[in-house]
Image (tube, rainbow, N blue to C red; front, top):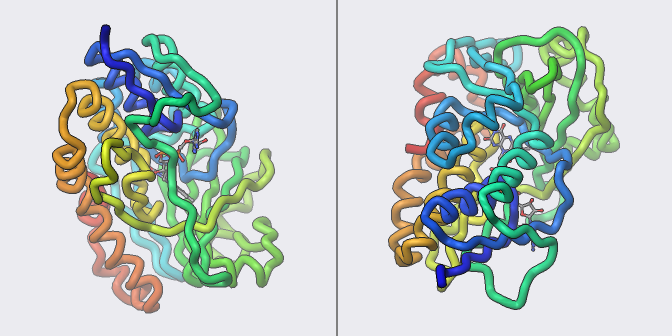
Length: 322
Ligand SMILES: Cc1cc2nc3c(=O)[nH]c(=O)nc-3n(C[C@H](O)[C@H](O)[C@H](O)COP(=O)(O)OP(=O)(O)OC[C@H]3O[C@@H](n4cnc5c(N)ncnc54)[C@H](O)[C@@H]3O)c2cc1C
């Protein structure tokens, strides 16, 4: 009888783990507490390397069938300064509403059992997303997002202002996703009214003029970045449960799919957890280090001054997992 692998969490990391374990011939059970599809706060930007990752899992055709937007350019706005560059390869924009359901459906079609409650057995793979944090009130960071209709662009644009940033990029069906991250102290000044908050950056306010919001605002938090590459015993942590990188790198989903797939394979072939974690560390460390430096630049207020010298393409390359 083949080993059964129980996975807690059916987001991108959990579903990728399921697909990888199924490909190794394992029996798989996924426990997902939410009913999919559902909106999730996310920039919904997929870096180009997602293609080979999904192809290895047999999910690339389904991803393309969801008609993701193609993203060709990166535009960084620091106050009044703007920095544009062409991405080395096209990236993608697809809503989490579509992506998470697509990936979990692939796992289900491949033979994974899906349940909404924890079975008695302990999970072998933990893919439950970010850990809750106990940061001081006011200092905490929150994410927010909404979808808009209107003219569609082929760039991913990031607007940095007042220790906040907001990303603008297209997703499927001619929609544009607006997703931001800001400290609680700033959000509370505007009563958490996101329509007002996005107007506080003049360049962003101009960018949003031709767009019309078509969903409510969704928010999430508090957020805390961190890597938990410690050996947690018998279970393989994957995705944000393993490490949560600053979202402006746009590599969280790639890291979730990659580490999920690595966890699924490792669990199916019986690779020791410590060895799996060592491989994850080697693959995911770089974006953390670079994101840490950039965040200090933003918080110290020198990002605007450094912007003219920052090579956009290099920055993009440095914030990808290896
Ligand atoms: C504001 C913001 C913007 C972002 N923008 C981007 C971006 O543009 N590009 C990018 O690549 N990344 C982005 N990210 C990061 C990306 O969202 C995450 O890296 C990704 O969601 C991680 O996937 P995951 O499967 O590990 O976790 P999740 O997507 O959080 O999935 C975890 C799943 O586990 C389920 N679950 C949790 N606990 C239990 C339980 N006890 N029992 C059963 N089920 C459970 C949850 O319901 C959920 O479905 C962003 C993140 C934030 C906060």
